[in-house]
Image (cartoon, rainbow, N blue to C red; front, top):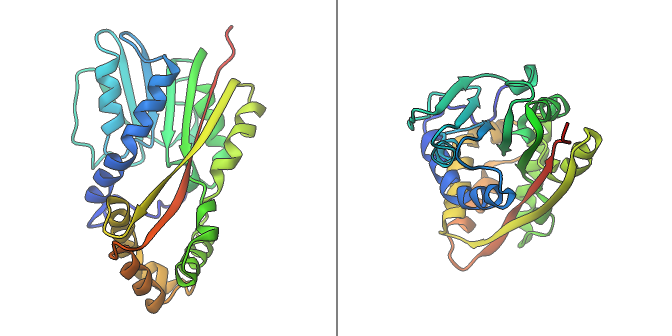
Length: 258
């Protein structure tokens, strides 16, 4: 797996992950609940667990008698602990965490960073027990193709050119359903959700934090310049500016029963 664009050693990464949890955990929990899988005694797996907020919630839901396994390349920003929360450092591209074991396997905003997403998805599927459910949440940056005004769209064009060069696939969301079908999953369903937000909002804060952390790399890539970044940050601070960025694509399916 290539180096993660937003490494945990970055100065503001803990704060950024906390904000991401605030913005995305409610959606993630809602979709997990809709599968009606997680109950006392169940075994769950979250890959790319970040700060561990979803895995800690799963640990509560599977008690008593169950176990929540949380896997990440770097566990240094996880502060939550629970008796039935099993934290493991690992790389899903290398193989299944435990073959044929879990009632629920989930990953959020992970696969778009993985150059070999095919192997990662294959290993996620292989970790399911017969009848278990897989829930994936990944971005599709389709909304930025119509972002306004033009200078904002120019920023996103530069961002996507930089990310493509770094091996980040910000359109992977639309490819999830056929990939799961090819691996034999059934009952495949999905939806896409995009937040409409304005400058000064929590979503604008997320982008300001992210872009500030990555600014030197973005400028150094040649895909963006200081003026483009500064212009976008000004819009993010303007409460009169409204936009949308990511269509978070949620896809789930079931492993065939034995």
